[in-house]
Amino acid sequence: MKKPSTILLLLGVIICLSLRVYGQGAEESKEQTEIPSELRQLYAQSAVLMDADSGRVLFEKNGYEQKPMASTTKIMTLIVTLENANLDEIVTVSQYAAGMPDVQLGIRSGEQYRLGDLLYSLMLESHNDSAVAIAEHVGGSVEGFAQMMNAKARDIGCYHTYFITPNGLDAADEQGTHSTTAVDLARIMRYCITQSPRQEEFLAITRTSSYSFGDTEGLRSFTVGNKNAFLTMMEGALSGKTGFTNNAGYCYVGALKREDRTFITALLACGWPNNRSYKWSDTRKLMSYGLEHYTYEDVWQETALGMLPVRGGIPESGDLSEQAFTRLQLAEGTEEHLNLLLSEEEEITIETQLPEAVTAPVEPGTIIGNIHYYLEGELIRIYPVTAVDAVEAVSPYWCLKQTFGKYYL
Image 1: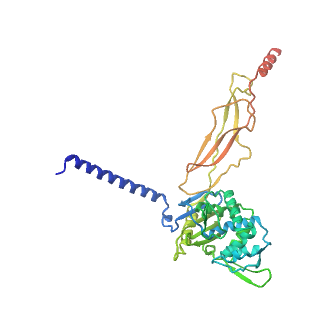
Image 2: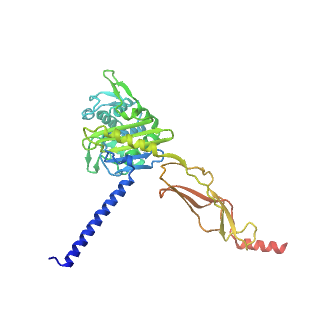
Image 3: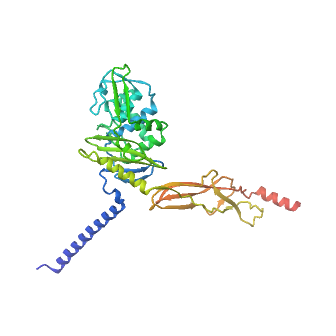
């Protein structure tokens, strides 16, 4: 027969384990409910939905995990080329470029092509040999071009991205693995379609349905067709790039614009053969979620600013027994509207940050404080508040002048 103390100890252990299991279940249930029901069944290991106008991440699933990205790499290859080279330059194909594995255009060592023509091969059919020929021409070498790609990534704000190849083939070196995150990949696409000085050319190339060209000697000719099925899948599809390697799985980054809203989706590790259609299913789910739940709203609110006491200042009446004040206003040139892409559940809070008083002298236009707009607790906009009236400081000279004037009169 077990002693009572032993029985009580066993009961205590059982109760603790039960509470722990219950707690884990509650935590998992809470995490599950935080994910929109429409997006709980995504295939991709990493996924992002981004507002292209602001760069705000509207939804992410493991969006900050670094993974190989396959041929989605080529959007960076394209934009770096557009920004750093003349598209009428002539590219001579190296033996190394010609030896790239499938997918290939089939260019041969020693052949010459117009750089701009090879960009269609790069983006429409994702040819690996064309990517290397482009990189060697623009960067002097694949390594040199990769340095340009990494520099551009840092300029865009992608600090968890590392490029080794211009075509996205799996690669690693002493500094890391050819990889990115879903958030960074979406940022790169955002730069390409909304911020780059060559954005129109980027869009024109990636939206082309087919393109024909040949080598400079006219001995060979090619026609390439766009493999981006998303362009005809949803109304407003803007651009995109597919990718696949054994390590990366199926990847995709795409953009859609409908009315005044532009969304970007990025998917990494979205299935392996024979599941190439998963990327289209996930892209449609993410884009549809954005279109259904997010609309633009003007969240601007008029804020009464009033007047602020000025310590040690000369009142407008000149009577030092009174308090000096300066009127307050929003900084000159402030646009009194703030359009944000919001869902119905998201909340805006406004916080006015002003001191109780300021010390003279005060000049018109001096920044006194700020009005902060927060979206779900995150600071998104700051509006400076400035002084309207000049207020001089009380000085011995002013006091002497007042006294002299009083007695003189």
